[in-house]
Image (tube, rainbow, N blue to C red):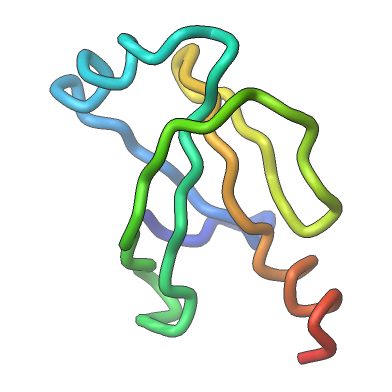
Length: 84
């Protein structure tokens, strides 16, 4: 993953990952936990888990990429929330 022009990430999902993630039901989403300090260009995903689909909080982004629901932190909003 790398940050895009909108201060968020360009996410690429490989065909093999799409096949596995397509088995997640539409009432669920993938929650990504990343290490934002690992690098300015590449962030390391250290956890992926399937959670019930829900609205995102102000410091999160809910994405739909190739029909896969993904939720992760919005770095700029999470920094505002924590005061950094």
